[in-house]
Length: 187
Image (tube, rainbow, N blue to C red; front, side, top):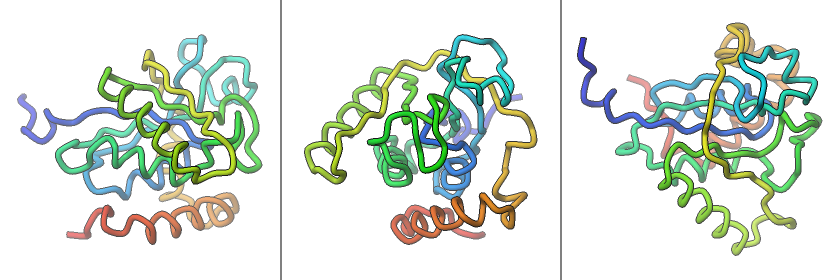
């Protein structure tokens, strides 16, 4: 079975910026993103579980892997959203979530992604948007492990859950306002 031309042109972006539920909820709404999977990357334990990752001992970060069409959503635009929806200046922390599994990290899938990520960080540091320098790691992608099924589409399935109401909903509202032109349109 052959893929449609649009499906053949998809690229992957693997990004960590705190809890993967937050990133997943945002990236699902971006025009040009075909699908988003929550998971784990950057560690040394094969097929880690959520419980193992939460210990901080596996080396993994909670990440999302987004399949996107660069002709609709350039990688640089995806990075703009990524840096706007989390604090890239806090080492191993996003809000109340603390540990290496919550680090800010970009796992690059190509030399062009690495160059774009490094250029974006240099640009944002030069603009002094934050009081501190960006600590986001930029490292080559090696392996991605999808998170357990109950983590997938979490916000869509549990919008009234406490964490979703307190953390994800305000983040989504800010994102929707700031990036309204980049949102998927209802058919």
